[in-house]
Figure 1: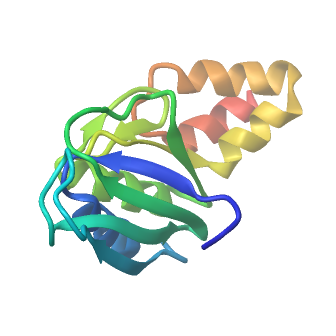
Figure 2 (figure 1 turned 45 degrees about the vertical axis):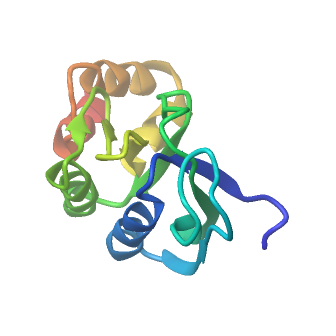
Length: 157
């Protein structure tokens, strides 16, 4: 196990979520599925308890702990994309699999986990600061999924 691992709480479907992430994002995989040795507050002996997986190289541990805790926007995965096709691919995969759109490049998967699907052109513009960042930011604000061409036009002024 890695020195630092993102631990994510699921009601009972950590394995389904991990397998979805593994097929959707590069450098992602399910490494192990561990079953509960005995009954526990969120489940029964023999049910999937822990799922070890990676998302874009980030080590994660999914715990099927029951419905005690919910995901919130206070935590999200931010996925950097290189172009509109990649942005569309990840966004559409999450939303079309029971997820929901949000604002400014954010969406939630069907398990309630938040994702930021963020084109590099946007983060690069924000890093430049000044008028470029202001124009890119103002162009982004009314968007749900980020439109790369609109951001590029805003950067040009």
